Length: 325
Image (cartoon, helix red, strand yellow):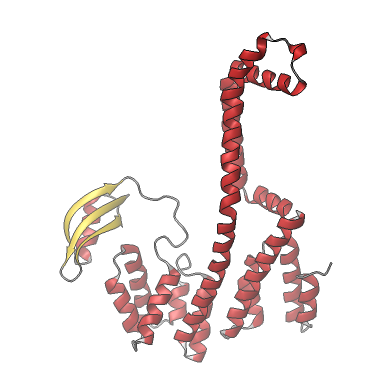
């Protein structure tokens, strides 16, 4: 369960924090253990169940803050300690304290991050591990943040371009559904007395549909609910979702755009890792999940085998992953 605690701290003042605890007493105990004075406790009934990977811990925000502190002249331990002390979110504070404890036990920064795979992605850990060989962590953080901004810029453009057509389709579908389920059944009663032989064929079909909706409204509503549930089920099944993606990839224009986006993300990621000092084969192993299209992934696997065998990877990768028409 989640509890919203209004607490007081001598240096931070009055704060409102959320704790995950078994009961109210456990929430109070956690807050007091962190040096807070509990003012009030309230159970949170509207906690977000569908949270992004990593919860409230944002890796790019952590990287930006760590880079700013290190550029200001702080060491790694000092910067992490300050971020942990200033964190207002209990989850963020717990993650940073966990990293500090692991470093204090003698582990490297990259190993400490790798021990929390649900918080730190593989690419971020690999970037930090590569910087440990060069001794230039700020430069590695800059590369990762630049990579993050580039990918998010492309994604934001795609989302922005998709909002208008998606909105048109949604509004148009709602209007059509309203006409077919509310307007047409009522107009069919008006034209019922004219005679079927005096009504055009399309109008006759609309009248039939109106009568069907009037007589079987509950059955049609149940069928619509079942159809929506089936569509949601398809989206949650990996095999069925893969089949839908394969169908989209075969479309003339849309398939090419999806393929281009995947290849752009793949090449940018590999370039960032290689520039940071990660070997080519390791970089390909870390980024193979970015290629979701079966043909691209098969070509990448064949290219990696060729590299390990000492073959010419450029020629093989160009033939398999980027096939010529």
